[in-house]
Length: 203
Image (cartoon, rainbow, N blue to C red; front, side, top):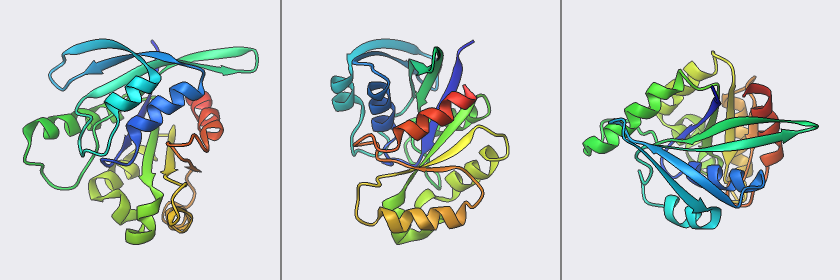
């Protein structure tokens, strides 16, 4: 069975963009995206990576309302590993009015236990304004507490290309001292080599 690496985090933190740009970082120009909605319906669609970025990522909250996964080859030295990188619906505090969004978040939480590795994405630029817990959100913070106890857990401090992100990164490091934190830019691919090393060690 192919190992799963789950990407979780709040809405608009950059999860979908990261998944697609990481696929390109690993040498993929075309991908097959497998979508699994909360009702169990599965669909597979082929994309050029650039088209997938246009169609599957954006600034609209809760644009991703189902698990969306791509199967990737992770090369290292003379070997390689196949794994599934899974984009998820964004988490939020409280009860969303849209039942479809609620089901999508429940689907995300249900798959946290099953994942071999978890990449927990945080907006470092917002951490400078709100603090680490404020930037993550209460439900997201609780997931982090659970995930970090089971191993295979890493925090990705995203949007390091923005001016306030350096300050936010220091706040995140203080709040989550003792845990692996990788500063990245999902937009520009910064930090992807470090993410690759982490994923290799767990999938």
